[in-house]
Image 1 (cartoon, rainbow, N blue to C red):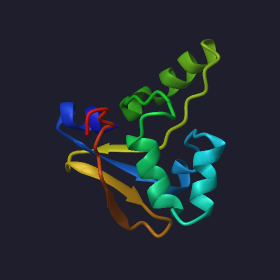
Image 2: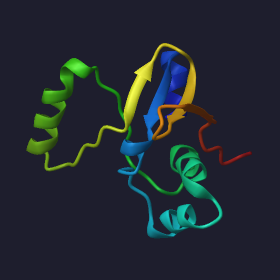
Image 3: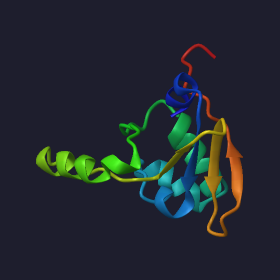
Image 4: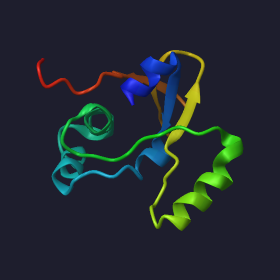
Length: 110
C-alpha cells in the first residue's frame, strides 16, 4: 500500500468496517484480539513482509468491471477503502474519525 501511495502521490483511507475483511494468517489475527489491537493489526497487514494479499486501486466507476473480472477469474476481491488526494494512510474508525497509520513498506535491510 505504501508503494502505491508514494508512487501515485496520493493518500488512502482504510475503513474500519471493510478493514475487517483483510486477509491475514490466524497467528496475526490472534494478535488483534490480544495486546496489539486493530490499529496495530492493520499496520502489520499493510506494511509487513510475510502475510500476502494483492492490493490494487481502481476508480469507483470501474467497480462493476472489477467485480466481473474477479468472478471470471474465480478470485475474491474486497473493497477496503478509498484513494484520496490528501497524502498519507488513514484508518477511519467506526465513528468516522481518521487515525493516521504509517504508510511504510517492508524493508529487508532495515
